[in-house]
Image 1 (cartoon, helix red, strand yellow):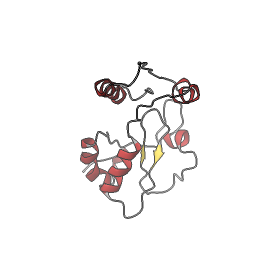
Image 2 (cartoon, one colour):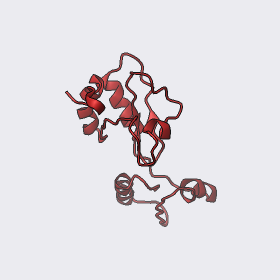
Image 3 (tube, rainbow, N blue to C red):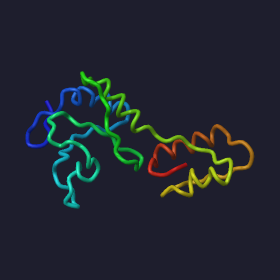
Image 4 (spheres, rainbow, N blue to C red):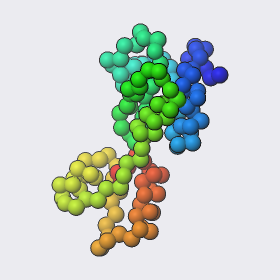
Length: 144
C-alpha cells in the first residue's frame, strides 16, 4: 500500500491507476495540498482558492504544458480507469500548429512565452513533420 501525508493511506483508485498512468506517460504523484509552499501558501490556497479543504474526499488534479492545474470531475464510484482517462486527457501533448495568416501566427506563437517557428518553402515533408513532432514532445513547455 502507498502512503500520503501524515501516514494516511493513498486512495485505492490512485494506487491501482498509477502503473497504467506511467505506461501512458503520465507521472502520478501524491501531494499534501495543505502543506505550505515556499511562498507560505498551501497548494489549495495558491491553485484552488475555492476548494472546500475540510472534505475528506480525495482531490485529483493534473498539471502539464505550463497550463494551470485541471481538477478531476470524476463521478462515483471512483475507478482506476476514470483516473487514467482523466490524467491522459489532461496531459496530452499540444499539437503542432500551422500559422496561415499574421493573425494566427500572433495567437499561436507571439503571445506564447516560448515558441519555436519553422519556416519552409512549399509543403513540409513527412520526415520534417516527424522531427518537429519529436521536438514538440520533448520540449512540451514551448509552442511549435
